[in-house]
Image (cartoon, rainbow, N blue to C red; front, side, top):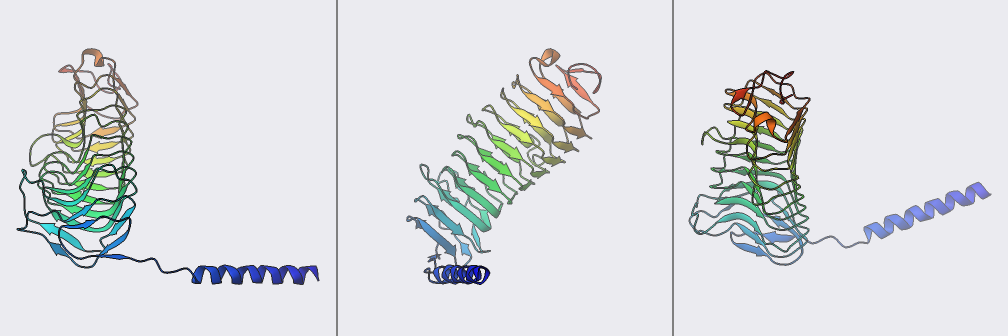
Length: 313
């Protein structure tokens, strides 16, 4: 009797749970159908069609409310307008917002593809291409950009700063004219991790894969960087590059200039056109280079003797 009673109670609970779930109202989706549309109320939005905003000098979509989820649903927002004075953006997220999610489509052209000024927000599964300046500009804090393709920006693929504690992970950031991922404007405690970063800086013949121009506590971790002009460039103190694979850099694989003290450990760097590893400070200053696998090096413009000698190790 006890066993039969237990079975009945479990069946009843299951039936109640199913009824409760099926009785919940469907979640409403708000339609996005036009260039320049502003998403000003929290909620979930879906792009119903491709948008070509060329010739309008209008932003693609503007988000002015927190807790907005914007599904592009495989569609494209595009513009051939490139006017630096008017700052035409594909998707623009205002500052002082949080909880924004942008996903699942393409932004092509505009001055900047996506500008994320909010905090605790996410861009995922996007293709951002052919921006006049930045593909994705991250200007807030505690944001994440992941599983996206950022390519053919005429300046940088992903730019971070001002802001901090952002995570850039599992993206393909390639063929951008200057830098793949750039950190500046006191951008601090950001993490660039597990990305494919290829062929950046080739057009402009400068910078390249990842460049830190300003800020500290940034970590460049476990990325694959191939055939960039420079691999990883550290020009601000207090940053770290660990576990990256850097190959075929046109100029230098990893280098520190104006960035001491910083830490470079457990990287594999080969096939650089000028030198695999370079430190601009005599005796490497206060920099720590340990456990790296490489062939050629320079310290203060003088060869350092290879991986088993000197301060570059």
